[in-house]
Amino acid sequence: MVNSDVQSPRFTAERQRRIETMLREQGRVEVLELARLMQVSEHTVRRDLLALQARGILQRTHGGAVTLDTSRLDLAARSAVLPEAKAVVGRAAAALIEPGQTIVLDAGSTPLAMARALAVRPLTVVTNSLDVAAIFAEDPQVQVALTGGTWQRTQRALWGPAAIEMIEKVRADWAVPGACAIDARLGVSAPRPTPPSSARWSRAHAAR
Image (cartoon, rainbow, N blue to C red; front, side, top):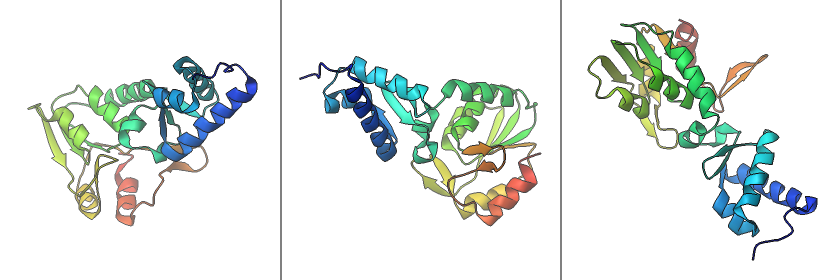
């Protein structure tokens, strides 16, 4: 039975707290599942999600929502967070690339958006992302080099010593590492430690 007292501030606050808890635990929620669990209409759930989005707690997606704590999400879920903004960044970055250049593209959701926007040819792309490589796989004017490494399923990336060793040998015109967070005081950060050799590469080449 659907709860008819959906407008009560008490019930609204309880539902939204429960949604926040589920987001912290799971990283994403679906409208149909929330409606079933809380015995309210899908319209009520969507209204709760909109309210939580306005508070900066989540990002609405088709059929549900994802947490804005993106370090907890896999690549597919991260790609659903602010996709329009990532597309704008991707197009702006792609506009800087000139024909004949070599570019290193990380496996993040924003570098993936940039890959989709890259129209200049010819081009050499070095990447640890199979998704990025797939964009150019059938294009005879793009030379693709995969880093090698250990496949990380949730991040859809090749990681590890083999990937780092290959990247350290690259002399590219541009390098586009994914940024997990940017702070005016602390700079760019990631949710896990950066191996020393990878840090050396970032300092030497990311600003080229």
